[in-house]
Image (tube, rainbow, N blue to C red; front, side):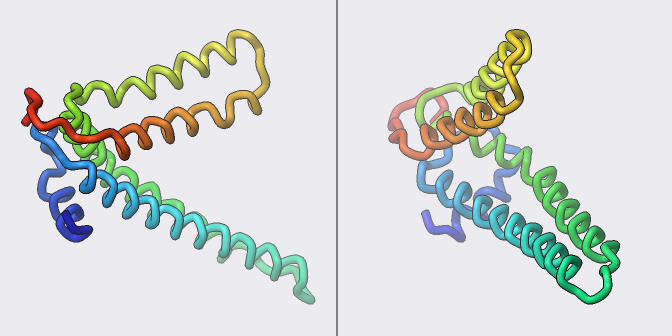
Length: 158
């Protein structure tokens, strides 16, 4: 499947939790949204860094309202994009899990693991730094599993 085919399939089947999506379609969409979010992060960091640099090195302290407005606008656009694609992403995860022969409910496993680890760290009084990388590592591992596991030909979801 081509990148364009994966993108059109993603939005055509945005509420379809039935059927399968190939590993290639899943990977195209993961790369596509990953690049989009990295670009947004670069814009946010660039705007914040430029504003900070100009504010410290200018002859007169600059007004930070335009900088904050730009950062808020970029963050709102990022939030809106996340909200718009949350259902299509959940559907894509379900279809990819079906393609591997698993129930779509397996995508809840990383969430449950993250909650249990977070509650455990909070209960045993560990610092926040102990908690910072756990959810990211678990989510990354889950996405790697979805990206590299081969498809099964005869599944009950086909």
